[in-house]
Image (tube, rainbow, N blue to C red; front, side, top):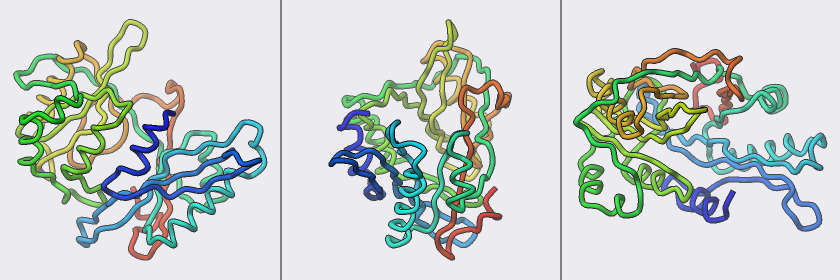
Length: 275
């Protein structure tokens, strides 16, 4: 991981700076556990909540098996509580999920779903490659300034606005593509498996509580057209957009991921109310 990427990620977010815990040996960092603040809202109670997203975890190979991961996590949790974080959430792999649940009071909510779909790669809507020139363009600026971010879908949802989207799209290592129509925004990238190119949906943001299927289809078709493929992949959840596709069995995924959650304050939903 490059230093400029970490500086951007940890210090430039409009939602706040990182909260982390480190383990040192002989003056060098040999373990790191980090969370980033994220603003969520509860549409039912109209409350805004501060969640911590567990993001970067690293323990040196020769430090493993010594309980450093658990110690770092506990210290980071204490720091989050002291700073008023309402809850922590993250995506854990098979190797770390047990530690979160057994030793850190997290709940395993569910396995993270992955869908594969097929779309006709044709649309009159344009998809743009994101670079510094595009982000400074009058077209992009006007589109974001006039875009209505819907943060009132059912349940708990991360709050998105123009500042947050601008920050995410300026990642030093991102290779992102931008599609917009009357229904919403789709951020995509691509990958290749063998000789098959796949459009990957990174984020889809709706203007309404529920995106119209015709707008959804148009966004996906435009991105597929840009990436010259009929295949698309989506990982995660989105209550505002029904993304169609075939759920991929976990056994064929190279590294199945799990959604984990732990409440830290009375304002956050209990572990049993997250679904």
